[in-house]
Length: 529
Image 1 (cartoon, one colour):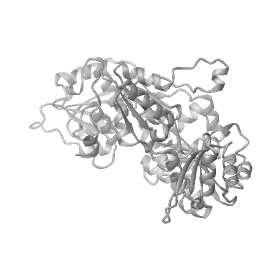
Image 2 (tube, rainbow, N blue to C red):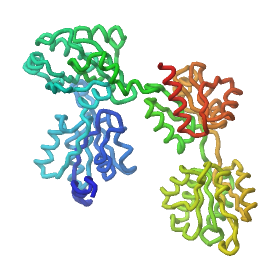
Image 3 (spheres, rainbow, N blue to C red):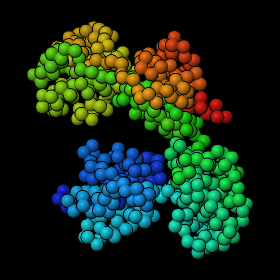
């Protein structure tokens, strides 16, 4: 039995309100716990701090309600901005209405004073709640900055919030030689360092200051208590309108520069902080973007192809009706979009995956197969070799009148023809209904700021996964600037890029998006070295 099923009571049935106080971690979406993902999937209402809304939103249902929290501060009140109800009231109101509420905070709820107050309010009102701990910001950020908080000597670790720390707190930390983890902002971190020196810490005590920790915007500066103000000024970080950004400062010998050089695993990733443009169709971009993130890059997806219904839908309607009445032995899906087109037609007729009963289903590759499984259909045939029409034909059985009562195959496809597959199936003795299920058209241009970034060198690299992505991107957004690294999936794509006046810097050793991302990472590592 897994620990998740054994230690957590089932979520209450609808009609009984319940609140989950959830730690969303310091910023990296990968640091959410399994329990957090489970709680989010069951939420009716999600009350999240603006900083972590994007981290948690993707794990909740599409129908989840996300009432907005307004930051209530003295400034808003003075200028008379109407203030929304505070989080505690939002949470309790929803729970009293029988909703399952998730209240998501940055870091860990146990270190969040507001969450503590909200828990007390729930307890007083008799509203059941649970707590899902998260990675505390003061612990997660130093780990990503390459600064261990303890060593074999096991010195004290003190956590200080510079906004609320009392004189007594500063003097206690100043008098000790333990590690101090200070939560401050870019503007206030030098003043916090001054407090520690005034309380007895030596000015040459090393410290690191990390902004946007655990995200691909993370930056860390190494200095001492006496030099941090100068360091931030020389790095042109201050003065700046971004001075209010939160930082975590670690004070103590373990944050020394020599040690950090060996331990800074995150900021030394091969593509750390690179802005990479991914011109693809939305369905296909996810796995490539995930791979780029694992190398530290910041992917920016621009759809270059849009999918539209066929100009004459009658042929597709006839084929779907034929599917239900037993006209076909096989149906072959050559793309995720083909699955989507058939699924939409099914929904239009009030059908579901049960209509595939008795029909053999083929998928051209893993992504198409995954889209079918998502629809509730397990494909009978996925190519064991190359994921293409040719690979599909290699494994396709010839028509056998003894075993196959029907000799017909339904092939829903794009308006771009698939002659190879049709000819191959006919050669194997099958009849093919080759039907246009959707059209691919050039997508509309991306927003002006994206177009300017493409032409002005705002992207460090752009990945081209086909000749059409080159043509379409240049057509809708213009030519990438010559400082941008151009990476292509294969020789044909590279040739198209060169024909458009682009210099190809990276060529994938094989036609796979994951190998393309890997080749770019190798290029980035070589450039860094």
